[in-house]
Image 1: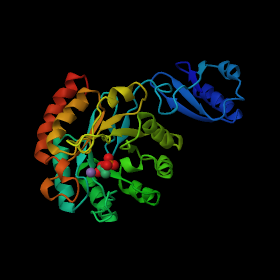
Image 2: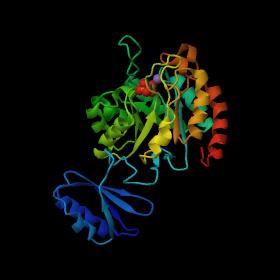
Image 3: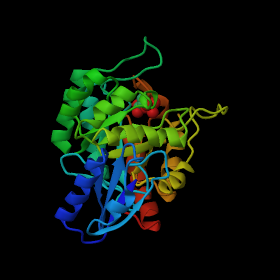
Image 4: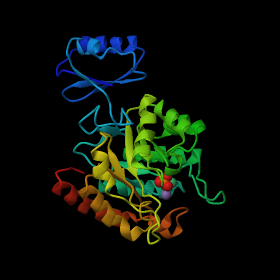
Length: 339
Ligand code: PEP
Ligand code: MN
């Protein structure tokens, strides 16, 4: 159920409704929009007297929520959420498009500091790099762990970029949150519910990747886990799905951008690197994603892709990225957005 307040409702009126909602044994999630506040009410609504809440001062209407996901739904918030990341609080969502890039894995201090400098000059807002890598094979490089987090934090200090890094287990949430600005939940963990709840209890924005065989509803319900645990700052990331095709590593469905925009206020980021698996395809998919309405991109970029410890084939070089940024700006302007 959603309680829609009239524009200009005072703090006291909003608190009064929250108290009523609690009296009915429901949990309130107020969402403060630009011109009005709505209060999503989660719990068993059978005993609720909808009329009593409707009669409270400054309540415009009380409506059922139809989507299976509630807090993530456009029904509770009509304007796209803007989520600010990193020490400079760069916004993603709304008019602003945010570009995040960096290698698949943190391999060394030199690698990260050199790539971070290029990204900063090119106009990126975030540095990505995995300190903990969820690898398909237990024999593949698993990441530098804590040392990797320290290197990322040093790069942030030098460049002001927001650090985006993956957390693969509940036990690491605290330390990864301490060193990074955005917690990435990888595709393989999209339905790792205790992990979703754990990142939902932090105050760090979460970049939630779509599982490789998850449906759109399952993706939004995973976001709902994080939001309902208390963290509204969820950025959705499409990273490609498994299909019968073999010319790509994963199939990148850009149609998910308008489909999500119809259903959710959460910002949408596209990962064209995992979404294709081939560096030569990445620039076209980046341009296409921005044209299709993405709020951001997360791109694998490595100073020496041929020697990358992971995902070299899909990593573009800093030079390609810098040239691409110029084109992305032009496409963004063509669709009335800013980079
Ligand atoms: C990654 O971002 O490097 C990664 C492991 O991605 P995904 O979870 O999408 O496979
Ligand atoms: Mn990768």
